Image 1 (tube, helix red, strand yellow):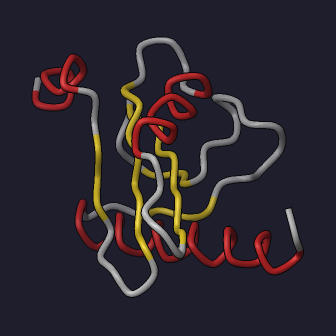
Image 2 (cartoon, one colour):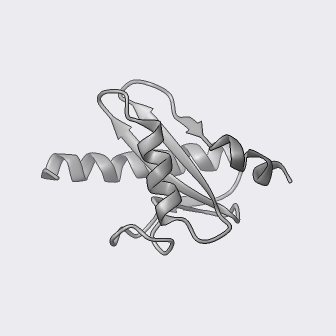
Length: 105
């Protein structure tokens, strides 16, 4: 990834953390980025059982790919959630329908 792409990713993750904190009412921050695992979510937050994958892009990003990455990186029993934003757009949250009830229980 180009340096500008890395920087954009960091900025996007910080923006996502701020948006998540405002929407959910808990503290959130950018996670440590290693190699994509349950130990390194894009956003670390105070809601147990949710693994956040964040994507900020110029063009529409494949939500399915983001969910698949979140599912691959999530700890067992965690719900994979994709938080995506196209440039100049709003943050959108996506959850697999099969996992929806785990969020509301």
